[in-house]
Image (cartoon, rainbow, N blue to C red; front, side, top):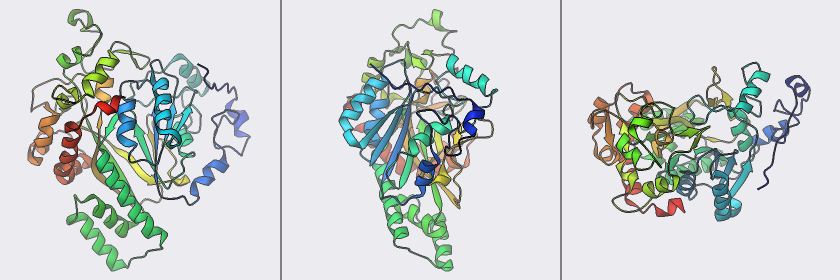
Length: 424
C-alpha cells in the first residue's frame, strides 16, 4: 500500500521568511497558506462539518463514524500512520460515504495531547529537539495545526470536532443541528432584537426553557448572538474482570505490574492496542441483545482518577479564522480561543467516551459509591449524582442539574437499539 509521505526538511528560520504561509514548515505538503486561512471568513451554506483525527482507533472508528454521519453534512477524516487496521477501515468508510467523507492521510508525526493513549515516538522526539522542546502551534507536528489543517477543508457554516473513541447520541446531535439552522437563518435575514428583548431572552435562557435544547440555543442567540455551545460526554469503562474477557491472554500473576490499575502502562505499543482482541472487543461492545458489553459499562464516580464526564471544551462553532485552534499555555492540549464569543453554554451529554477502555484503565472500588453501571446511571436521580460525584466542575453540575433527565432518554435509546450496524 502506497501512502503519501511528507519529506519536509525546512528549518524554522527558513520557513519564517515565507510570509505567504500560516505554517512554519512552508515547504511541507501539509502546510497551510494564508489564503486558505483568510478563506475561512467567507460566507458558507448552512451545514455541519465534522473533523476527526484518527490514529490507532481500529476498535471504535466504525461505530463512531456510523453514529455521527446521519447528522453531518461532511466529515473530514484525518488519518495518521497507525499500527492497526485504522487506515484500511478509513478506506472502507470512504467507500460507504463517498463524497460526504473527505479522507486525508496526514503523515507528519504529531505531538499527542498530554492525556493521549498514543505515545511519543522517536521521530517526534527528534522534532522536539529541533524546536528545543517547545513545539510552535503553527508547526505541522502540532495538534493545533493538525486540526486547523482539517478546518480549512470544510465546506459548510459550522464546525464540530469529532473523536473516534466516542459513540454519539445521534438524535440529540440532530436536534442541535436543527437549532443551529434556525439561528443561521435568523442571522442571514439580518434579524435584530431590542435591548429589552435581549434581557428577556437572558432570563428565559437561564430560568425557564432548559432542558429544551432548541429553545435554549435560540434564547442564547437572542440574548448574546455570539454564543459558543459546549458539548459533553460520559466516560465509560470496565472492571478488571470485564477486561479479562477481551484480552487475548491475561494472567493475573504475570500482568499485575505490567497492566497496573489506573495507569497508562496498559496494552499499548506506541498507542496500538496490541494485547486486546479487537474483533472480540467490537463484537462484545456493539452487538444487539442482553449480552452487549456496552450495556454493562461502568461510569466512574469517586476514588477513580477519571471523572464521570469528559469534553465540555468541545465546541460547535461557526467557521471563521478567529476560531482557529491554538495550544494551551503549557502546550499540552489543543484549544479553540473562541474569539468574540460573549457566552459559552453547555448543552449536556452528546456521546459515550471509550477513552478509559482504550487506556486500559480499570474501574475499581465499590458499586454505587466509586462507580455506577451505565444502566443504573440512566435511572439515577439528580440528588444521587450530585452527592456521589466529587470535584464537580460547573459543566458537570450543568449536565446533572439541567440535562440529566433528558439525556438519559437518549442514552436509553442508544443502549436499547441494535448496535450491530456500528461495527460493519
